Length: 469
Image (cartoon, rainbow, N blue to C red; front, side, top):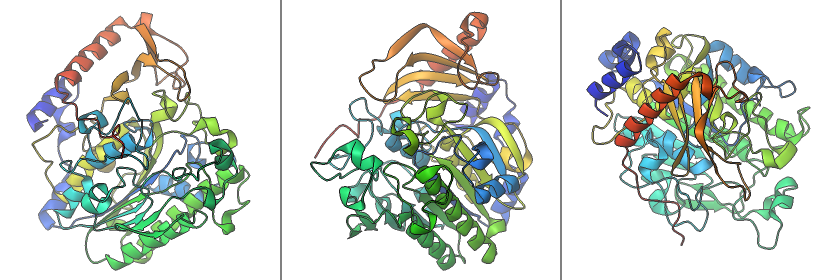
């Protein structure tokens, strides 16, 4: 979408075009050629209510709590899908997965027998930043294609250390899936650990994997402190099966799930401490969020969406609204942001910080959040489209969210179409309990117009998930 088109779109949503301009701080960065470092910490299946700072009463997260106090806590921040692969594709590309083909109505995510992955012609945030002189590292779970042509080192990352798909995959034949997820041993899952394109350990020792990811991040920071860097730090946890190192066994009152979260909190603390020790904290933006909501079907081994409805796999709020924190001492204006944001916005925001222009040969679905982060301006994002596979299930505009189709996360439950659509005021009713459609026909009309415009600009990619080896 061109700059003029986006300005016109903002005006139709009742926003000033000024919300789309770069902040003075960013302009200064471009003029002085100083490029900030960027780290995105991305959890797997973390629930909206799983952190102390987001309201959990028995999970202790002092490092994330401090990070939020020193930075910005975003209370209405979204992913573009409620399961792993499409959500990660959206973060990497700044585009809805339906545009890139990284979603499917046949298989919701990639598997070890999948033949596809993120298309070569998609530009990732790593590629964009590498072109601006950044050192780039992917550390953790990838899940955008395990074949060599789809791995991080073929998508803009200088180096990769992690697992290529979810930690519950490559399950040993003959084992019961739920049983080994609830009472796991590392020998139950033949998940490989890769360095760049080489398998260095199989099965990966998942007891120590969070600690080893953290060590890799710290070493990369120290090795590249003299140049700008981008790190995508994608934890394997708290996706089941749950593992934690010995030091965190029994550490939490919330059981093994709490132990896992508290080790992730420790990991964040180690990264932030390293930035302080190397005097990089005031030139580094760190973002913490998750790929989708909690996997509720795993009982105590799954997380909590707090006051939000449902969890992973659904287009209800619990599936796609994520606990999110932005941190950059001395730059980001501390506070609580209740405006809308999305992982789709990380691509254009990172490009703005690096002084990079967005490629003009494709439509992007993200917005530059710099004015919110640095100046306290309203967010330019006013809408969110909730896809399940290739189908649009719900749309949010402002405070209101319309559900056209609803469906349970897993099992043989059929999708239920709603005519008229359900409508919720998420400011007053974040739990999506009270249908107010009959009170706001004007809002529904605006949402339908927004969908028509969205569809008019939609070119769908070929399904990259369905094909098998």
